[in-house]
Amino acid sequence: MTAHLVDIVRHPIKSIGFEDIQSAPLIQGRVLPFDRVWAVSHEAAKFDSPLTEWARKLNFVRGVAAPKLMAVTAQMQADGQITLSHPEVPALTLDPDRAEDQARLIDWLKPLWPENRPAPRAVERVEGVALADMAEPYISLLSLSSLAALAQAASTEISRHRFRGNLCIEGWAPWAERDLVGKRLRIGGAVLEVAMPITRCRATCTNPDTGMEDLEMLELLERLNGDWHFGCYATVIESGTITLGDPVEVL
Image 1 (cartoon, rainbow, N blue to C red):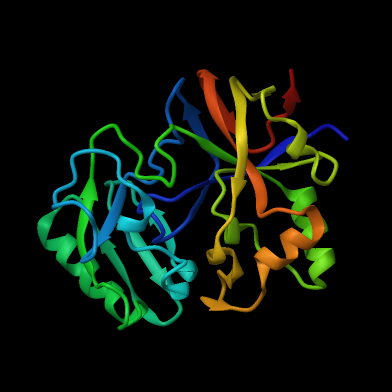
Image 2: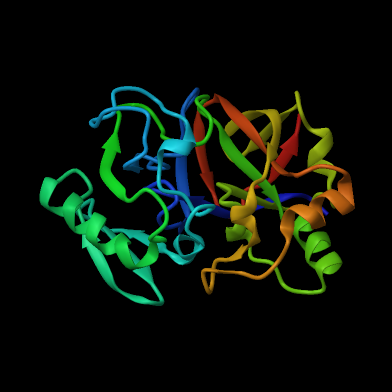
């Protein structure tokens, strides 16, 4: 079966909402457009706000510290505003660049954030920099065949959104992506080079439908493959547009 692209997912605010989209222009040396543009720093962050350069993930609000955040969904509006939704709190529509809306976001996070953790502090943005876990401009790839194998081993359905990937691919053999490091992929009009596997954290133990931990994902990954890897990072080396249904070719 020919591999093809079945999901494109962006996360406008780091760790606070995921959004499925139909198409996107990939640009050489850049991340998926509008992915991790903003992030929320907490009171124990190792920098003064506003942020001026990429910073490590431990400085920001994340799902590993607050499982309820894994259940946030996002939708970007035509005017650039973002609507955040969660099963436990009313939806919030905001412009993350407006000071008054940044304050509203901090307040919106309070019931979703553990009281024993450093509190959310400020919305951060660095022009031209994605506030992702890695400083490199990576796009993350997931194999749905590997996800199905993982679900079979766990004897339960597993949402792809546990892994916060950007591009989901159907048609590879289970775990075949583990052998793609250093190889190039043509997806639609773009070419990407696979850089490295993604090492997972406990955020993947949380069900994104409920915001509750319900699966020891790291133990499961280690039992199956001897490590905590799931998916891989890739860089865009030739610009082009990608669309759901595009073939994925290993070059």
